[in-house]
Structure formats: structure tokens, C-alpha cells
Picture (tube, rainbow, N blue to C red):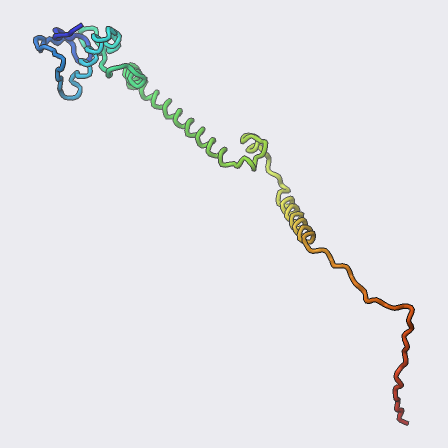
Length: 198
């Protein structure tokens, strides 16, 4: 199907009932330019709807505050962000304020969960062993922990000392001088002179 011109735009996007320019022909290459918010996207959507046969592209653009049944211009396609903005428009000022409070609470919960994950990741897996993060954090303080640490340090020092002893070289065997028990040794004492003074 070839579109040669647009006769009338009514109740679509920015256009309530517009027939200005109806005699302007459309060719294979037509340039449409205007300031922001003047309806360029709406015209592009209309042409897209004509090329695909999807009337839904136009039907979803309901407008407010017009004499005729209106459409709302919200871009080429209706996406999640568009629906959220339309939802806020329908809620009104009070509803938007309440929705803002809900979003703040959601953000606070998400931040809290991120903090919990960061703190859980900060506990080394070797420290908590087979315990989960929750089980590890639920452990009760041990009032005897200082005494137990001192005892463990004492045992560690003893083990290191024992290891140092075990690493020492073995003692060499003692060797005594040989004695000939069958031979008699002659022993003659040397006479000593004693002078006694009277």
C-alpha cells in the first residue's frame, strides 16, 4: 500500500483534529521537522501503523483533556516506563506521593539486602567452616575465649619446641679408650720429702 498524503489527523497524540497540509504529497523520501513535542513521533507511529497494519500502535495512545475521545502520546511503543508514567498520571498527586513513599521503602529494603550480602561476603569461608552466614552470626560469645586462646598458644609453643628438638641431629655414640686388662701396670709412687720443724 502506498500512502500519498494524510487528509486528517484526529484524536491521536498531539493531534485533536488537524487537516492542515492535507494536500502535501508524500514521496519515497519526505522530511518532517518541527520543535520537540509537536507530534513528529506521532506521525512516525501513524506511518508505522499503516505499514504494518497494527492499529494497536495508535489505539494505545489515548489523550486527555480533549473534546473527542483522546489518545496519549508516549513514544513509538508502549513500554514499562511509559505504563509507569501513565499510572502516575492516573493516580493523581496524592497517589504519586504515596507511590514515592513505597519506592523509597523498596529502595531502603534493596540497600539493606545489599549491605547484608556485603557483610556476609566479608566473613571468610574458612572462618565459618560448614556454618552458613546466619548460623555463624547466631553463635553466642564464649566468656572463656581469652583463657582458651592462651591455652591454645601455650600448646602451640610446646608443639613448636618439641618439633625443634625432633629436628636436632642424633647424639653420636660415645667411644671409650681401650684398656688391656691382662697386662699389669707398675705403679711406683715417687717419694716425697717432708720436713717437719720442731
